[in-house]
Image 1 (cartoon, rainbow, N blue to C red):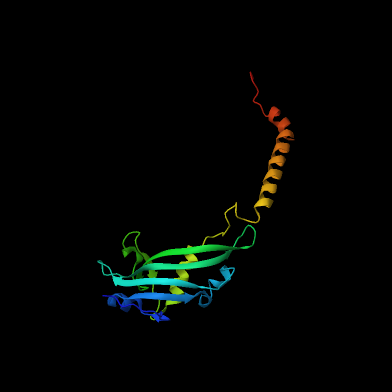
Image 2 (cartoon, rainbow, N blue to C red):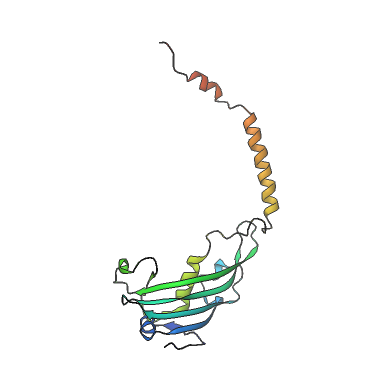
Length: 184
């Protein structure tokens, strides 16, 4: 039914792979992903893939599978590297640019527009990884080296708020002047 392949191809025709119901397993080095590399604290390692291509009951060329990697992102709180395990479930329906995406059934598949064939497999996987990254990567507060500074800032903010409550607003006198005239 499926043929296993140890080495991933650089370029693929997703429509042919779907018709042949191929299973691709292997790794793509992170260094090949030029758009992803600047978002990482360290681009060493690889993405482990298990991709199953096929045609679904509606006749769509589709791919399901997993992408796993141990990424190292830069915490935006402390600016130190942090480990971020990637466990990505993929479910893509391949469509040509002239096909309406509204025909993709429900939330199961994400449409992937194939501009040209062959398609670079690493580019397709890189797109999905970039979409899965957190917009602002941060350590858990208890694990972040900046947590001691944050606690100091929070206590200073609490003191400032208490001082502000004790001070009278310079506009409080205007509130008394803005009362409606009674009885006139």
